Image 1: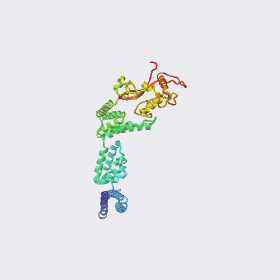
Image 2: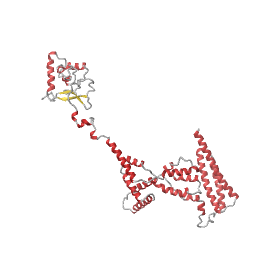
Image 3: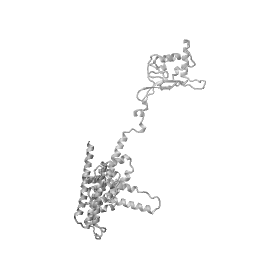
Image 4: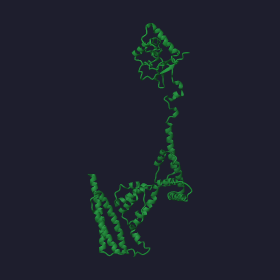
Length: 449
């Protein structure tokens, strides 16, 4: 209900303003019928009539946006046509012949009649164009007291395009809001520092000549002279040189540094070199402190730095552990002679009973999770002590010593198989890593020692 109430209130205000403007036009018509006016006064009344008519049409357009069925436009046009026809008939066919040559009275009284003949400037929101735009607009519209404020507002809106128009679009088109909208536009774009640096940037963006051409050379000279004159209107020669140096330096820095520099600026003032160097030095110190906390790429390792500098701290020595078969604390099961002397079938059965991984003969994981090497003889996932050398069934007790000796000799020497492959004796050991944890590894036994 609040939104509908606001729309209804706005529509009512527009209709009130429209009625007031129509009343002014009616008073002009009544004046023409009751009083004899001079030619110059008639021409002046004609200019005022044009202003009221445009003002009434503006109200009518906004009313029709909210109420499409409104029929007020026909009444306004009828009143305007009848009043203007009356003025023109009184002025006669040669209404301008009575104006003496060189007489500027009419131009001072009715500047509005000249506005359609003078093309108003356009502004798209580029800072470098603002000075030229606002200067012309003030001369043609803003400083002319004979133009109603609401008409000035309409002219201002018609001159703005793209993002510039968005600066004042929140204001309703009323006489009271014109001054506020104009001040908002000044506050937004009358930034001396931004305008100055855009001129500098445009100077460096001038196109390079593509060949020997008089027209290109002339354009280059004219554009440079125009930009230089614009710079001189804003700053001294020393300030212009400073701006050029700042532009050259900031065009070579990274994007983040450039954004930091822009954020530190007061755009209503010209940039100073001392401020630029201060910002860059602060940025440099910040980056240095940040880089000092980042480890060098050569030092990044899974080991602590102390162990990188002192490799001797990394221990590869065999550690004492309890044998899971004979419970001895001097060796592991893979080094247990009693376990080695068992038949392969019994070794396999014992490993299963003790819930050992048959690939490395350790507890705590299965074959699928084991990262140790597979059998060196057949590459199957079992320990070399569990490899069956042609053994298809359990051997008799009388052959246990022979089987044990056979495996022992294979673990301590090399032999040639049918495919002339060399088998090296290895042993699974536990090794302490940089974190102090024990991991399984396979070590090569030197059978010649």
